[in-house]
Image 1 (cartoon, rainbow, N blue to C red):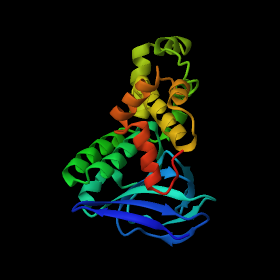
Image 2: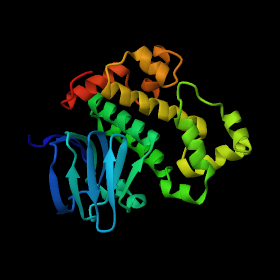
Image 3: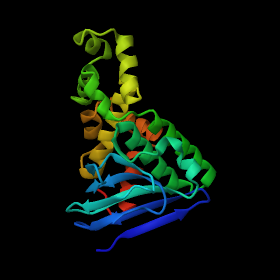
Image 4: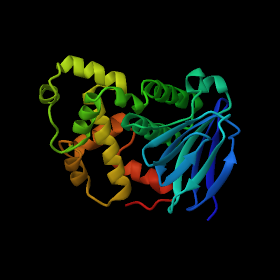
Length: 260
């Protein structure tokens, strides 16, 4: 199996949808253009001179073109959406550092961008969605910050566990002996979102993963991820990710994955 790639060219950036074969190795290299890539399915290990990251679905990489890196791909195909920048000013001063990010809002915004690419293929519209992606991305701090303060990680754990029976924010703040407003402000400083927003994006990200990897009914997925019903799930996906559950499964099919 060879790499399968589709590139949509625009003046300031290109959008590339790629499927890489299993067990591929890419020797140390630099990319010609700076890029941001979103893993849609599969796994890879990427290493620089001083760091190595194993990344899978829901991960995003920010990769300036001067960074030398090597890649080892997992045992299954890797499906990737990449934005490469012909205009490095659009990539921006804020993205000088190579980094992998695992965050529900970033993944959901990536799916939204992918959806818009399929739907409109208009540079002006896509630049607007890309700006929203950048704003979200800029608000996300690296999770290394968790090490300096213990309670944000505890809040994150509580928000992402038992999505079908979520704990109220007030009860969570009381359990941790924190004022609800102070907890929300401190959490936003670390994760770029309020606790309520973080939980909502986590629900959507988890629902997208279930849609991608299972043949469960929409009603079952809605129940397991904390939505009131199938209609609530569909409305929220359309609002945050820009697509309905059925559209998302079709998008996966367009990258060589059979509909579940």
